[in-house]
Image (cartoon, rainbow, N blue to C red):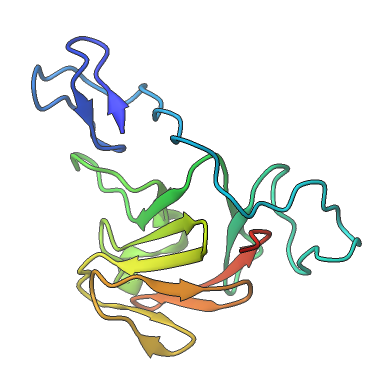
Length: 170
């Protein structure tokens, strides 16, 4: 959640204008996540036991998404949940991870397509009632139903393929 700097009303992350007073919220940072997430791998370095192989994540990132067919790795850093989708000019709510630069619109990715959640017992993805569905390793997910995902799983949002990179250990 983010807080409106004018009226202090709580808004969803990605909201552009406060629904109470109309103040523009684009430069407001998300409030920090409440409490620590259990199961982090602290002090694990490349080449050491337990370090996932594959493309490099930014320092401190527990998760990342490799865009299949490109060299892009999107590091997910500093939160326990991330919405995935596309940003369209004038849209009131924007995703945490904007996949627009990867031709996501033409691949059938919805504006707010799915959400990745880090929980103490693992990593989950939820299809947010998207128009073209979400699959994990070829299995179509039910909407609004969390599905467990792990390092190297292949995620498809519509026709856009992503691979999960994880240092998160349950």
